[in-house]
Amino acid sequence: MAKSVVKIKHLGLMSTGKFFAVFWFIFSLILTVVFGIMFGGMALLMTVIGIGFGGSRALLPTLMMAGMNLVTFVIMAVILLVVYPIMGFIIGVVGAFAFNVVVKVSGGLAFDAEIA
Image 1 (cartoon, one colour):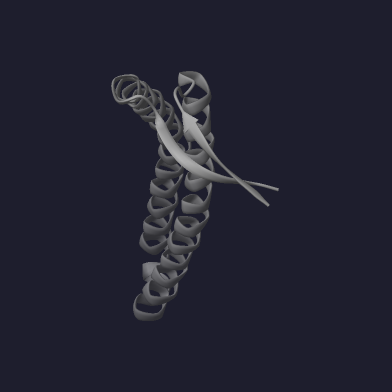
Image 2 (cartoon, rainbow, N blue to C red; image 1 turned 30 degrees about the vertical axis):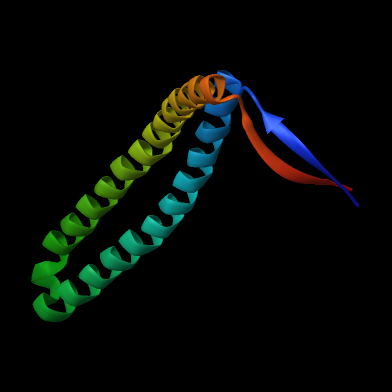
């Protein structure tokens, strides 16, 4: 395996932005699944406890609380799946721009690479 030194002198703004947008979209999907499990568990637990303690009198308020829990989850999921990728894109573009400015002043970023 031959080793060589590679020097990065420029990052594409759009490609870096797209990379971070996709990265944060995947991350937000994972968070949405985790939060979905948590919110579903809380809704089930609230329903069981509410009916257990209040009997049939507590059915409507308990289901209303579970419904509010579901609405909160849907709003949070939409925000995660829309805002995270947009912010990831913006941060990727700004970060690539800042990197390009620093690299232009400093002459590049060198690292060792192993060629297979």
